[in-house]
Length: 95
Image (cartoon, rainbow, N blue to C red; front, side, top):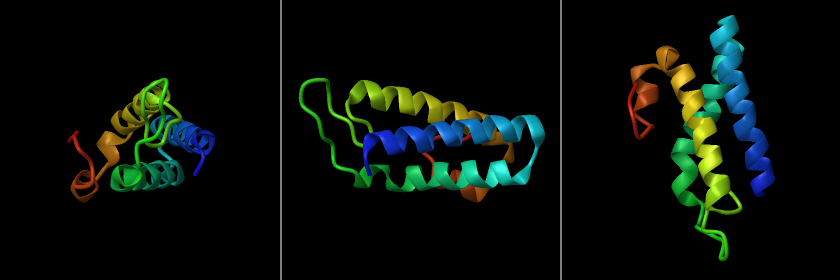
């Protein structure tokens, strides 16, 4: 999957988490939670790549990866109150 596709998906996760927090609609929670847990479970499977601007796994370079991580972390904190204990098992930090 190209880095630009990951950018779009991660932005959608972030937006869905914010929309869930505002509206409480389950569809936003389900989308954001599902994608967030997918990335948590699959991130290590992407090989590091890049040369000149640092290595990334899902981002084109380390700076891209850092900004993606910020968006995913913000989404996580927005979703945290709605995550189950089982959801937390797939994540490296707890609420």
